[in-house]
Image 1 (cartoon, helix red, strand yellow):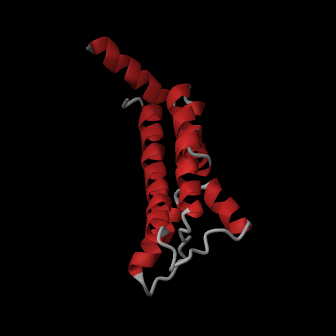
Image 2 (image 1 turned 90 degrees about the vertical axis):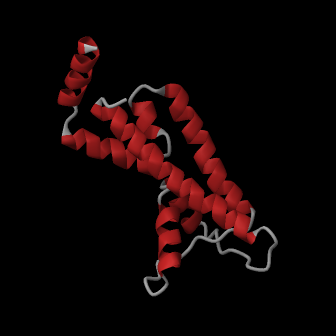
Length: 136
């Protein structure tokens, strides 16, 4: 037990705040990049494929990329979770995707896929942070 805690302490001591910020920014921008950076290839590849695919599925299902409207708190929360996916959100905005078709039967499913993809990426970022800190 003591040997395991000293390894974690050495890893934690070797992590600099600047590299942690870069790790978290990279993990936000490209889902799974934080795990790839830390050498956890299997997890990183799974996140790299699954999360953008989930966001893309939401777009295909006529989901909406929500605007930041602070007058409507739930819409603002949905917008914040959409941004959580990183680069796929920027690409969708750049190509004017995610307008949403309210009359489509799959509209709410698309919204859920896109919101959950952003929220899951937030958890993936926190996991990469914990790995970098030596907690996992």
